[in-house]
Length: 127
Image (tube, rainbow, N blue to C red; front, side, top):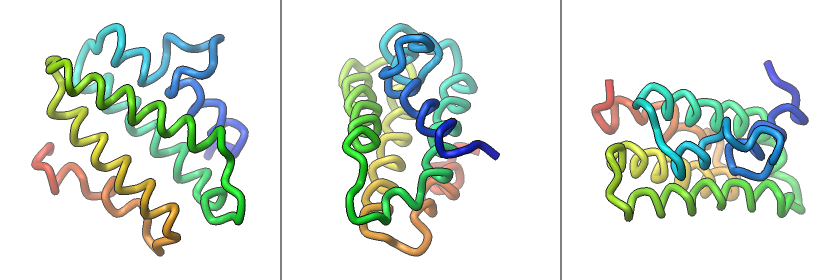
């Protein structure tokens, strides 16, 4: 289990906001090349491991602007990728929908905000 600090640091990597590890993140792979579905799925799963660890930060009165900016960076880069009609565009589109739905659920304090993520493979026939 990762700590909140580790989760924030890893989320920054995926958003491209950690220069020391920039080339290891989700946004970097979207910009410079995905090698396989497995590679991008692993990174997507890491993003959600971070969000699950940071869940209670969304329920505070004042949510970190940096946290929201990192998630928005991931969403924005995903949308750019989809519009370029790249090889894995459909999969990235699914990931973007799941991330967007989860963010709304977190902000609305829904009891089970990760339901879209927990069931996306069967909901989108990715098994």
